[in-house]
Length: 108
Image (cartoon, rainbow, N blue to C red; front, side, top):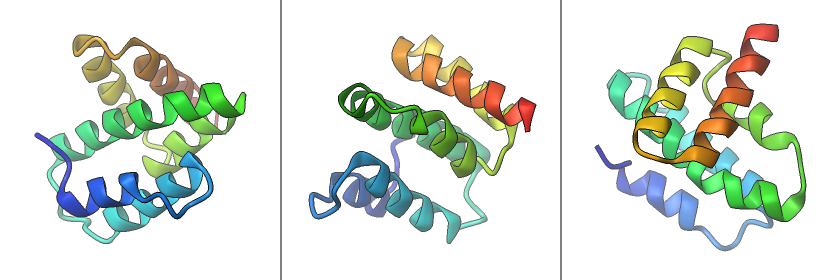
């Protein structure tokens, strides 16, 4: 399942200064719809990780796992499921980012 159009619009917004700023805009859109199907939330996490991986390399930052953990409200099971989906879909760097977020959520 593909992310909703407002989600894609938020990801593509060029007016924000960094990918992390755009990720926060995406989070705000998703948080408004608590009735979203679970599978959609999992795939949105994979897409968000796909989006943040290049930003992580560009910024040489360690904020991405924290962003992912916050987006999932610290739900390590949701993050773990998204990591599994990312690995199955051959999104290796995104899966690694999600794995770091799982570890962060479990440590909290």
